[in-house]
Length: 261
Image 1 (cartoon, one colour):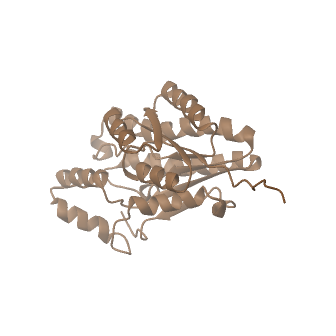
Image 2 (image 1 turned 90 degrees about the vertical axis):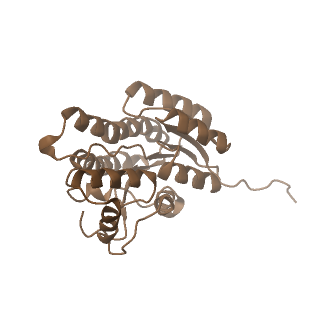
């Protein structure tokens, strides 16, 4: 009888942006738990250092995804470490200013779009140049329910997240014939430090208490609750898995059914 054992599937090779904390970190750790090899980046050097020190299963580097040269370096180093690329998760984004369009500085508008939209474009372009020729891969972009509705005092954020839906649809059409799937996830209000900062900024701008703003955020969803980073990670990993092999060009909303913003 042959002693040769059947080889299982190769571990997924995953690159995740903005993964020193929040959704990105939760997703990275869950991919590792699933058996994947994961390379991460973050613009916050100190946070990244702490994360890599705490989680020896992860490797990564500092990267501001709005900078073309830094994204090129990220993919060079990431692909060298991983030995290729099967999954890209674009988590990088910033909240942007809390102000009406009439009072908003153009520089604040541009910075928000640069990180949220330009950064995702740069990473998608780099991934497409790898995944297209190899004939396989999955890209998951992080949009938002803000990309489905208007969002008073958050125009650049809503605009960038709306645009990511168009980028996702278009890239799915371009790469689909080559076996690459592209989807986006639209989280609702995700509990955590970032949401705390958004609530504080909205309270300061409107004169409400933070508790009142927090309640308002939960009341806009049918389930009357925030979603968690784990909820988003679960969806991302499903889309990147064999179970999601025929899903592409889709917007998966994980928000408890937002009724209005």
